[in-house]
Amino acid sequence: MNTAREEILDRIRAATGAATATGADPASTGRAATPAQVDAAYAALPRTYRRTHHDPASTDIVALFAERAADYRAVVERVPAAELSAAVAAALTGIPRFLVPDGLPPAWLADVSADEARIVRDDPSLSARELDTVAGVVTGCAVAIAETGTIVLDHGPGQGRRALTLVPDFHLVVVRADQVAADLPDALARLDPVRPQTLISGPSATSDIELIRVEGVHGPRNLHILIVG
Image 1 (cartoon, rainbow, N blue to C red):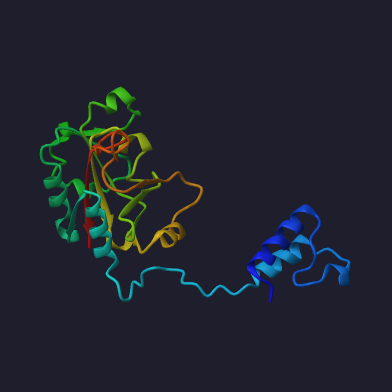
Image 2 (image 1 turned 30 degrees about the horizontal axis):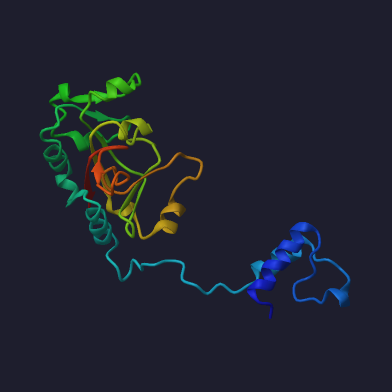
């Protein structure tokens, strides 16, 4: 059986037009393997490695996500669906004005919708200067990753364009329990590859200058996550 080194060299020779068939002696065959033959040999290699790090049957994926997101200094709460609107209102206490993107479920704002002066809509699209006058934003998400405590936005309904979640200082994200994927491969399998994607792991922060952590440099300084269900 060929070694990994031989397989790699066969693929290089195929790409340069000088390959021999996998496992074949160049002197005995005198024929070069085609790229298709090399690809077929590569595809036939056994791959018995694990494809996931966490088994949802034995691991509480939602609890793992909550733990990892909290490690990034995000505020994380788990709430029943019936109490979501109250939890949203409580999380927005002290936020004078906040953005609500198109497609956000109205029921999420049932306890704050009476105070319309606080709600800002991105219609027509707000300029960067106008966004800078808004203290917070409320969004949903496309998927969340338990292993890394990461939230992924694909900027679909209820998430808004990217600027809405980068300029305000406070970001409140609602994550349904069924949106939590075990790891990155699981998350990518749920996403549409043609859509833009923003990955958020905790509040925006950097330690570029003298290894001193500074939050709020590239995005919201405060991230609050409500996990529903």
